[in-house]
Each structure stands twice: as structure tokens, then as C-alpha cells.
Amino acid sequence: MQVRVPRIAREVIERNRDYPALVKDAIERLATDLEGDCPVPAPRGPGADVAGWRLAHAEHASETWLGAEWLYAELAFYRELALRCRFWEDGRDPFEPAKEEELAGARPWERLEVALALPGPRARRLFALLDEVLWANRVDLSYSIAAARERVDGDLLVDDRAAAVERLAKPGASVHLVADNTGTEFALDLALVGALLEDAAACVTVHLKLEPVFVSDAMPRDVWRLVARMLERGGAAAGLANRVVEAFGQGRFVLAPDPFWSGPRFLRDAPAHVLEALRSATIVVCKGDANYRRAVGDAVWPASASFAEACAPLGAPLVAVRTMKSDALAGVPEDLAARLDASDPKWRIEGGRGVIQFAGRALDLR
Image (tube, rainbow, N blue to C red; front, side):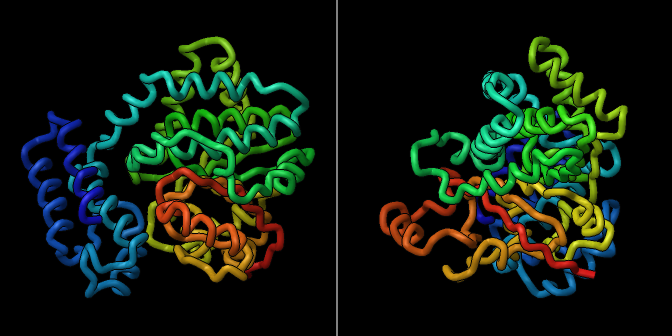
């Protein structure tokens, strides 16, 4: 919060040189306020869910940028940045230049080509695609140290893919995917979506951010930008894009943006309409580090606690697909965690390791 996040704010100024001086000055003041540990400002409009943010701020009213709960402070920063960039007034994404740079590079397309060429029957490909989307989660434009990591044997600490695929491959499955990053990661997500939609009775709902968050997190506009680029490239990428567009027209591919996903609450405190949507799923695929933190209350759980015990009860099976960029964790064997602590003190935070964790026991919140 004191170093990386102010740098993100200043990169917005650098990448958007045509912003008016008023906007640039407001962003710079935000960066210096973080560095100086000023109080987190009270939420104001315009913006989504102002009332919900004001309730959350009342719980954190005396806290400063460097003294607040981390998830709350991070999301308050991105909300404040959107306001100072005047996103809600002109719709301009302050992170669009970074997103465009990612799509202009080779990485998304090379990774997508590999994923679309996976052989074998559908269930086998779904198993392999979960691995592809896991490691694509390293490509996070707000945390370049993770994107630079190369996969090595042993990086996957928990592998519950078999239980997840049993539900993903179920005929007529209704899969809800809680998205994380656009670009490379969402290209691989769409490869998974395409395989799911091969079942003509299946439906995929993608939960998205409503505003710019964490630099590369996906909003609806990012989905359609990526689809358009896939159509331009032709070949297998265009074939996947056409399948997605067709499914969208049939109501089998659904986008569900909601202010909750960029708000300050944990999954256990999600509004009723979000929980009802997730409860309707055959399985929920929860992508990325921040969504994992939402699911487990942004906590380091005791070694004896399973992921299912730590995870917010949804009333639907959930699989978390996450490369680790923060300390929050449950369900990793105690002896494995101890060995990693001894050999690599930063194993929880640098994006090198990943987990695919399944929570099958479902408790109804009603």
C-alpha cells in the first residue's frame, strides 16, 4: 500500500498523458496520501453502491491507508482512483493502455493456441484446461513479479481437479465463473468456457467487475474487446469467439457485472441476489487471489482447517483456481506449509505457487 499501490496510481498518469491537469493532480494527491498514511476518505458519488460503501466506511472510519484492513484499503483505493479519473462521468478506463499493451503482445495468443490444441475427450480437456487457467492467473498487470514466474514441478500445492471436473462435465451444467484478470487469463478462461459450451445444454455465467479494479480485472467491455481480437486473428481463436458469440445469442453465455465484486465485503456477506445466483450453479469457479481472499475472509486459517471449512458457505460446490499473491490460505497440509516456510519465506505472496481447491459441502445461507 505504501510502495506498489502509489506506483500504480502514477503509472495511470504516465499512461494517460492526455488526462486534464485537474485529473492528474487529483491522482498524484491520492498517491501522496497513501505514502503519507492519511485517513481513508469517506465514500462519495458518483459511483456504484455508494450506500454500501458508506456502511463499510463507518466500520473503518478512524483508519488510515496503511492501518486499515488490507482488502478494504485496496478496494477503497481503486474506487477513489476511478472517481479521480472521472470514470463514472466519461466511462474512460484508466487501465485501458495497459490492457491494450497486453493484448498487443504474443503471450495471450501463444497460451490460447496451446489451450485450444489440447487433445482428447471433453472431460480430459477440462482437466487440462483448469491447469492452463490456473497458471494464466499469474499474468496480473498490478503485480508483475507473478507474471514473470515460470512454472516448475511442485508449484501446484493442492490439486482437486478431479472433483471439479466431475461437476463441470455434468450434462446440462450451469457453471458460474467469478472472473479475475482480462488479457491472457481471460483468454484461457474463454478456452474453458468454450469447452463447457460444447454441451448444447450447458450454460456459463461470468461474474465481472463493474469498474476498473486491480489494473487488469475484467469488466464486460474487456470481454468483448478480447472476443473482437480473437475474431480478427482468425483460426482456432476466431472459432472460439464465434462459439461464445453464438452462445451469448442463445442465452447460454451470460455476463453478470455487479458492484459487489469491487466492493469491500467478503463472500459470506454478499447481497442476496449474488448469493442466489451462485446457489443456482452446478459449480462455481472462483478465479484469482482477491476472489480467494473474499471466499476465506482474507485470513490465514489454522493448519487443521480445510478449504471447505474456511470457504464461505454458498449452497453450491466451489472450486478456487488461484496463484498465490497474498497470505490468505486454508487447506494446505501443515507439513508442506512448514517445508515451504523454511525453504522459501515468500512462497505465499510471489505468485509462484498455486492451488486448485474444491469445496463440495454446501450450506444454505437462507
